[in-house]
Length: 486
Image (tube, rainbow, N blue to C red; front, side):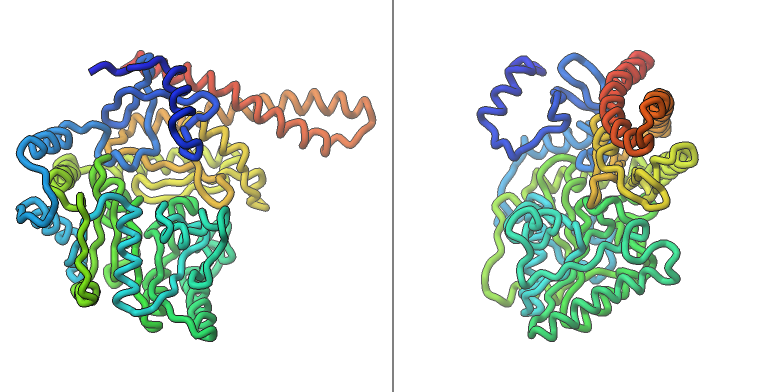
């Protein structure tokens, strides 16, 4: 099969004509055309190699041979819906059950994380007979209408907050209302959820669920303070609701030490519903909801059959089984511990050298590096992070100031060191350039007898944008050097 049908410019022109403009591209100023991939590397139409630091969907690596072979073999035998009896769906459900607490033993298979979260919302409401939902600020749970309604990241740009949605503060100990110097931030943030429940009850409303990612991703790679989830679950259950853990971005060993990110909160914490997607199929559309027998029974009792045409089909389940096999055989959870720990240490070392890096946080191969204009005020460096995004990876957080690292799980020690070296070179270059320009500006402004600092602040911000655009070219050369050395 040819890697290209059209020249890049033709593809871009046709996309602009045929595809909705709200479907955006990476590097919109000059989109990258990727024609093949392997492991943690992407290749454009010219053979240029890119190190992928953000594709947590291709969990065990792009085009892993074990995954593609499993898909092809099952596709050659049978693919049908789940009204026919087949071994794959029960084999896969049994394997997933072995990774979860015993009470999470009933599974529903769907096709995407959005479908999984939509179904979780239905399960919670059917079981509790309540309507309202508590979510975290800046949360994102999917693109369906039901999920836009519980995603502050989206609904604040659209029709706003529904009456049945209650937004709790993001438990961010770096930027949030309770920070790392608080004696018990987990309890303090949990109490904000308790207050929301009490306020809802005063209005005659009842809580069906607390809905949260186990580690908020779009919220800025947030690590929950100790005890937060357990206490929130207690408050929500006392109010007659259930705890829904969204593991769509964080599950399947990404945190390294555990298979699921919610397990970081301790063995005495267990959600009532867990949703999973993205990495579950290594790029193939499959997702899942795990819940308790009691919640599943309430859903069945409504008398309405739940049927999903493609959910849990033999091919999807064969791929899911292959992903679990690769995770185990290649010790990718262990790799997340080793490589993620090394990458985090490298970024912490950079933090000691570069004032622009305000915070480094994360676990396993789920890491965030927050850029700030000033460490004392912690003012987010949104514009600066956006330019780094165009060079290395992507950004998240309320101010888009958090550089996120969620690479394929086969990411190596050498990859981590390349990323660190590149970021170091970019930031060192900026400081040298800024120092030179500042000296020149001071000489000019003093000569004109004007307000030096205010003029320099305005001008250097503009220079920074220009400088990082120039650094993109240097980074491309850096990548070419890497490619030649492989």
